[in-house]
Each structure stands twice: as C-alpha cells, then as structure tokens.
Length: 203
Image (cartoon, rainbow, N blue to C red; front, side, top):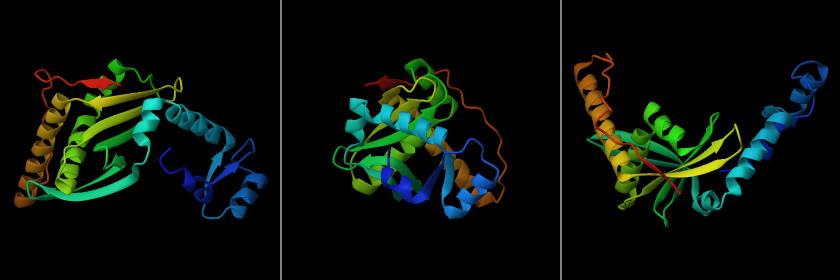
C-alpha cells in the first residue's frame, strides 16, 4: 500500500506447496538477498491492499503522501523521533496503517487504542509534526481487517490526543528521572482510565 514499488526488488514469490526441499532450496539460490514469500501470502497481501485502496476515504487520505516519513524533535528537552507510515504536509494529517486479525469495527478498535496505547503514539507523532512544521496535524488510523478484508478509517478525537499527550509527558518525565538517577526500574504503575474518554470517529 505504502511502497508498492519495493515489492519486486525485495520479494520473491515461491509457487511451490512446501517451503522445503530441492525446489525451494534452488528458488532461494536463484533469488539471493530477497525475502521469500509463498503465493498464498502474496494473494492475502494483495487482497488486503486492494481492500484498502478501493476504500475511497482511505485512498484519498493516502494520495500524495510521504510514506515512511521520519521526523526528529525535542519534547521536554528530550530528543524524540517518529516514523509515520504516511504524512501529508499539504493536508496536515498523519496516517497510521494497521492490520488486525479481528473485525475492524469501531467498538473493537476503540478498545484496541486503549490496550496498545495507540493514542500515546498518535499524540507523540502530532507533537513532533507540530514542532517540525509549525502546524496542528490530524491523526488517522486506516484499519484493514484480515478476518473479512474490510477497511475502516478512524480519526483520533481531541480528547484522545489530549489523553495521549498526558501519557507522552508522563513517560518523558519518568525517562528523565531515570536518566538523572541512573536507576532504570519500572515501577509498573497502572494508569487509571476510568475518568477518561477515548473516542475514535469513523469517517
């Protein structure tokens, strides 16, 4: 989806039934320095990519973006770096492409945002983009389900990004204290989400 031009130079598709034996060994020798994938794996990837790019909103968001875009900055005097799946300077938005083994519906993804702290990384990326380009950026998740080949697009709400920003600040303060003290002990403090609302808006 993001860099289709890299497929042929970096991947070789093995059409055999088993990833072993003389045929497979010969195929590896004939394709040095390439990642070997099966025809079934390629087909699954093509179906997911087609699902994503045939979804009008997802395709529009990804149009004329910079893929795998790195940014560096400082937050609270700590050097930070982000590598966005895709970013649009003109549309002022950052896109994070996700695949999931579960359905991509809003209720499930809303919980996934909390479980995997997606809001923390979204807020971090937006802060770094603001520091780099001097503009506020929206953050979108494009979620492609491997279960049903569906694609959903979600926008991080202001409360979600605010909650993520609080976690970013908390993590950086903790990092600075550990660096100053030389004690790198994780106290495994649990974050109370009960008073916060995490919303993602499907578009």
